[in-house]
Length: 359
Image (cartoon, rainbow, N blue to C red; front, side):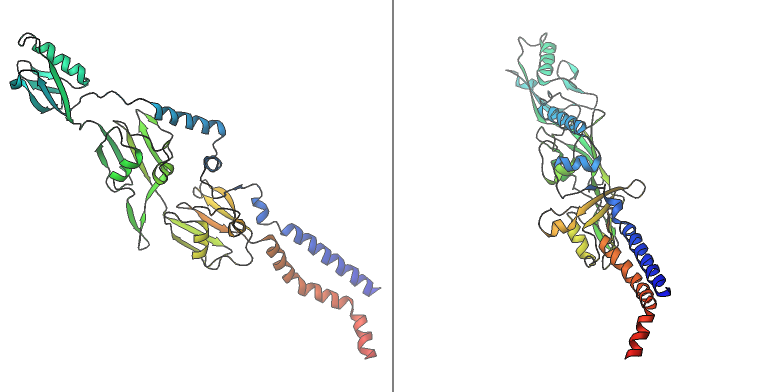
């Protein structure tokens, strides 16, 4: 009777332990069932998933960029600093090459100060012609622009040479970024790293923040995003607040390492001595800081099998490798097994006594 009670009690304890282990198995990985997956794709659908934009907002973004690309080149208007050449047909003595003054005026024979700032070339030539009419019979006036210094755009922030730069009708965003020296750098843990945050950089035109993806414009030259720069545009290159990536969890050497442009998940895991055998098939990437974190899972087993693309990391990312459910179960069973063996031995002590007696 006593042995029967011990056996049923042991069975109950062991069954309860296994039932508890079943709940325990999802302690970590079950929390990530609904987390969005990153698949290493740089297409627009991935951007939508990362930023939370819906299809309608994305369509509006593309519509606006298409409008910008289709806009006609603005009519050139002379302005302060522009160098122009004025010629009067058959009156070489009236010709001159000059810069338009800060007030938009130029000095001209017979006319004194003539306001050309804000006028088109034809409007300026007509104004001079009308002014000369009382002094010159049927004057024919031409204006040629020699150098345009008024067509400028400003680039500021985390670039090597922020400032005001002259532009032409062929200057694009990536061109201006390159002219400004591209990303600035700084020392971080004894190494030099880029500090430009292209994901949060902006182009402002006449008070409107244009829906430009800097990374697509600068890194891949996507023509839709690599927009033509217009006079008066303001470009701000955001600065990364954190130039590192943290790798933790089921890896051999958890660490915080310097972020390098083009760093992928596989490279980061390799630098940490790779994952332990207890790792889950998905790796969790925590992005956008700990104050407002966004969680993504990556099928790292799929990457290793060639079924998924390697995922590009961003500065500030936290790479967390959870322990696999099965590993959690195995650890639990290893801790449970000695207790179960003792219960089993105790419940069968009468059998052992009979065995030893017979022996």
